Length: 486
Image (cartoon, rainbow, N blue to C red; front, side, top):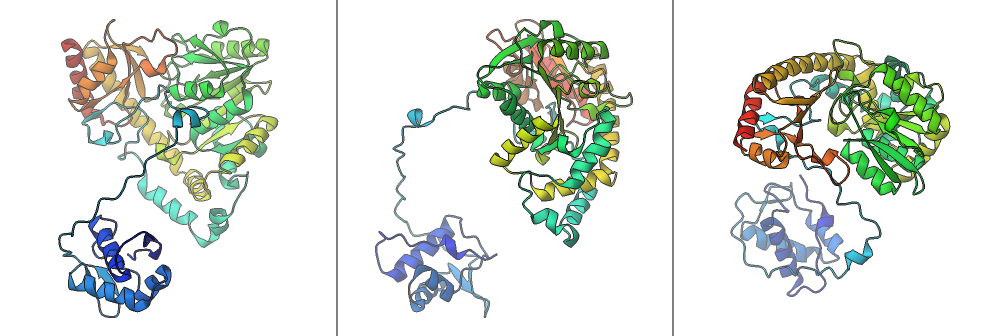
């Protein structure tokens, strides 16, 4: 690998001859780890031109570095970092710049301080990772995803890879969503009613920005997806948390004056409860009475096997007041960051314009790769396999939970990938999570999901998407033992 000549810079205030300064600059790069063993340095001619010095000056500096075994010369190939560079001479410590900006005054709007929990980046090294939303590498179809990615890089797809769609999306992906994905949820939409997003969270942000302002009121579930609550707080709208029950969001508790209702009817986040059909119809009726819009986050409907999923709220909508949020990030892998919004054309038009002003569109190669993976049938095979495995893991977990006397506070009637758990009153699940982490068990404390000051401390989420079935019983046994010791 060649070291870019642009990384070489002679500081104007440096001391010593040009030859010595160049020599020191190269040596410091090697000793600091910026230049690595075997990497090729720029030619003497190229570096001299870049630094605006004579070529002989660079040649003499390189020659001295050769003598000191910092560099080696390989025939007519050029100069390379030596495998046995000697111990460094001591260089004066670099001066640390002092930040003179008063950021407490300079920042006009703050986005930190939300309740979003931090998940360990090294979760895979834990033996019992009961954390939500991570992909099990044993389930994902790496080979066919790689083939689709290579296909999307081919000459035939060069235009879709490199062009600037401006505010549009890959037509192949949009067509697949319109013709295959949405009909499975009972939804009929044309291409002007679909917008590709960077995951469901980006879709929720776009919806909040388009629909809400400081004068409007948004109703959210309590508990709810913590990132959604942060998004809505940043919009500065009036927020109305509504306590959920075993069937999800109760329509009769949505306050008067609500403009937008955010709900997760397929699998309520985080309780996993599934909203029954009569309540879905009652929610639509309540929204009609309020003249409110509904934003439906339909995550995890793909895990509803072997029973068919409940029809989407959007499929029951006859007024055009439901905006639908879907995502491939959960069903494929979270790092994909690919989702979509479905709504009436005037709404999608505004959301598209907002997206264009922020990021134009998600990368073309990612969209085309996903389009191939979906259209060639690999996606259907993946979700069938995932739903089957999740069903097996859920059964194993239920048995272990019952055996150890733990309490399930909520679970999906149609699949899902987690349980919402309740511990005895007075238990602090934040403390429980820290204790369990030392025993190679990861759980998600429930407090960040709740709104308001009176946050119950005794809930946690137990997910099984990333842990094999054979480890689940032992992991739950560790949780039960830790609870007894608290």
